[in-house]
Image 1 (cartoon, rainbow, N blue to C red):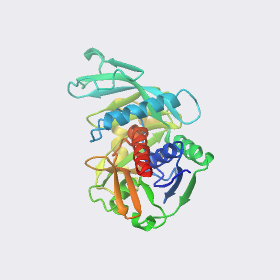
Image 2 (image 1 turned 90 degrees about the vertical axis):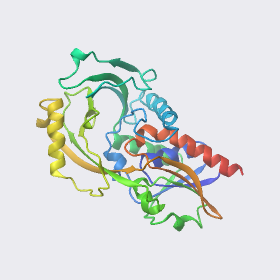
Image 3 (image 1 turned 60 degrees about the vertical axis):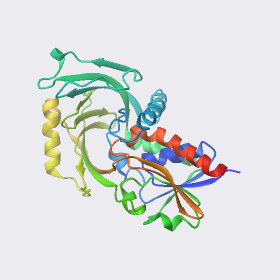
Length: 316
């Protein structure tokens, strides 16, 4: 008999956890306040990038697992995952990233070929995710296998304890309230999506957090990361700053027609929280949140660990 498990949250972390649990034999249900695309995950530029921005001993293992899954998904044309070339540049010399030998393409840029003002850089081919399409794919994959999604607001995980003996908490930044974790804080992001079909390669200035990400649903310009800012409204001053920085990197890009401007709250924390907690005598929670701005990079690896924890709990 399959065990039942309840996932709270429907962003990329919650959806991926639910899909992996379901496909590992659990009867999974998702409870969520918001549905895609009305989630931070739908706002993200969402490219895979090695997990270096996370603080956790397992970050490389999680990232590697996600990379393999994205490369598998990118072989098809059905879920919004593709690979693309990105030029990443730096103001001072850097060493090779740990993942240079596991991605499809990696090449250092000669000093003479770097854009003016930069000291180092490299080209790499990595997965990028067209977030609205990909989140819809995960939802369809979950629901077509019998998964149920309930839309309701949960103020505290204890509200579920009596009827849900096994819970996965993937509430992102709202874990600060739902799980009473004061170590969680918002990292506010803002992006501009423009029509720029002529842009085929991505760009990332690591020092200024300036990026240009060509996707099939538009070219994403960013970015910003504002700690402890809960404002979900578009800030025109931030938009102008993003446009100026992207124009410097790729002259002419700011003339591209704007499709939409979006704001999201990344779940900041000193370290990803992926562990179990005994909430009551009859309810155990597996926490899976605090991924900062790289939830897509870590999602499949973290989901595999959630499955392992759930198996341990149901085997007792």
